Length: 97
Image (cartoon, rainbow, N blue to C red; front, side):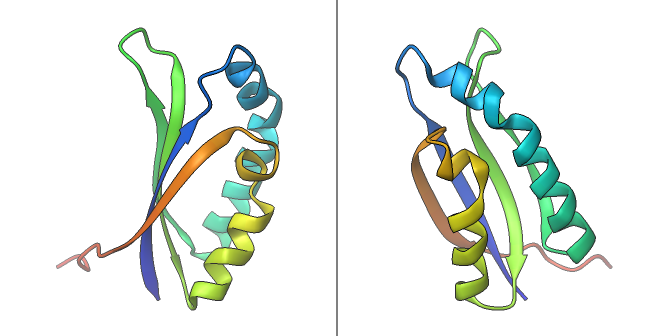
């Protein structure tokens, strides 16, 4: 499987945090599915100096780029306008010794 780093920034408008909180449970439900399928490696919220959530970093692995795109097309933070920018880079976590 190919691993990917997803670096996504939330909007900075007044409703950004409210959108994140509204989509949060659906996002977490999707993460649980990814975990069960072996696609989730690591992830968490980006926070500013005040501790406010401002984005996400997730390491995922998929068999094909099309599988990654399918996930992104259905990810609640993406479809509900939470993430305003998404950068995806190939990533490599070495296997444990």
